[in-house]
Image (cartoon, rainbow, N blue to C red; front, top):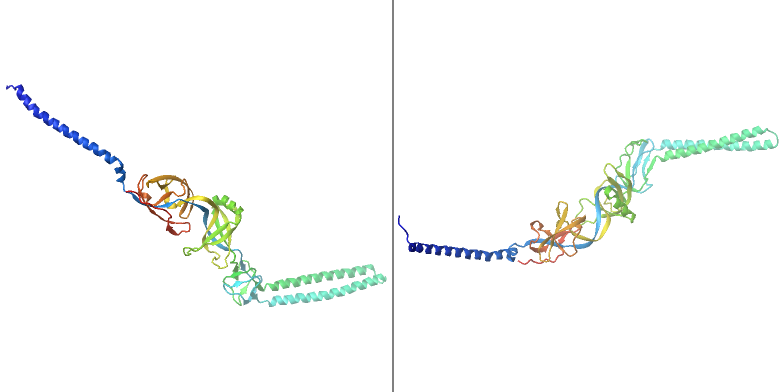
Length: 408
């Protein structure tokens, strides 16, 4: 075996050591370069790398908000009468037309009254005969008194004359009652309007046979149209607030006409009665309201919506409903922080009015995000613009907000 000398071993080791030192120094410089670059990524440049989100915002406002409840109602006439005959006869005249406005006491129908007039004349004749008989009995009684005073007749004869006179007086009174009954029966042949209002469709014609029958078809219906009422049901959970509101004075009601043009003002009325019991099958309470109806815009049987204002929240914090985020039992809104970033704030929802909501947990003047909140996370930079929101009346308008651009 060939031996290696110390000098040759040293010559081989020196180049290897130089290569090793060179590699280690290169690794060290790379590590220093990487270490120097790392702080630049994790510093403010990292936040600047997140793009600002365009959002629509509105300012939180303070307002007096009415707390209202809506329900479906049916228009009903305050008075409605079905006219039927009270005697059996034939129709002689129809003096009312379909849809005519009639006054109280106005003559509407006249029936054939010949038989009733004959009966009245007979009763009057009977009365005249019995009155003549009564006059004769009075003379006989006075004569008997004179004869008794002269002792020409007995006392019993006077008593008999007095009894005959009293019987005649009773008969006259009976005849007078018969005459009044005949007059009433004759009056049934003229049918007059018991109330003022609008007549419906007339169901008989001259010559038609009518009968005194409660189940017969009415000759005509008359309904009072002005004023008019609307009946509706409210949940029994609103009963306490409803009664409290009625104790404070007349309670206002608004009727919302179906298919009315946008912006049409509702018809205003007032609650007149709250029923004395709750319907246990539906859990509702029946309410009636009265409305002026001179223009006859409300019609009996019409189906519409009514709104009752139970109370007013003074100085309420109001935001658009669209700004509220529902997450389980939580209600949250995104608020614009002073540095124009998104901040998630919990709120309590107290009431709703159309497109607006009454909340607690915000301050007037704060800006809340309405549009674009689905793209946000807490701390996201924001680029603000005015949102288009609907007010309580349903009209859309730009929100009153001062929008400022986020720094990029």
